[in-house]
Length: 135
Image (cartoon, rainbow, N blue to C red; front, side, top):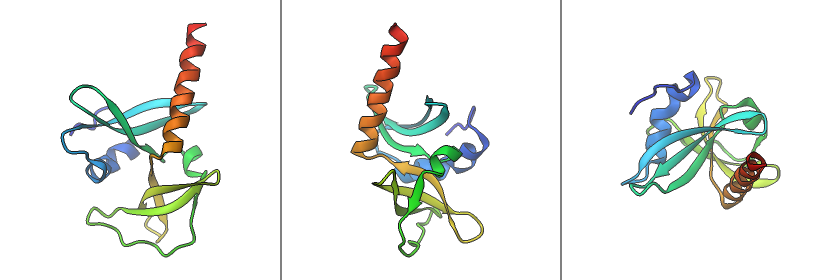
């Protein structure tokens, strides 16, 4: 339940996002890291044995939010938490984005739900960084 150490944007929306993505029997966590020159946060579920599953990448970094192109479909009804899931694309790849209203009737992206493509690219990027550190 703690929001210690979170950026203000993450602190504000973390409770709703955590509950939306909750996996029963798992610890919910927000892990921060760097992709290229951008600090990003990933919402993860952690098993009691320590296995981590990436559920979503936060879209609070402007560099990520700018890459999202929402599909031209009617705005979905928000859930009881005020959040909605919208179809979109990043780099031509289909994704699903958890959004909240921005106060002017437009969707504000909160997190990009993880896909097989995102998982593979995060893993490849992490391996590249790991190999670079060893040298």
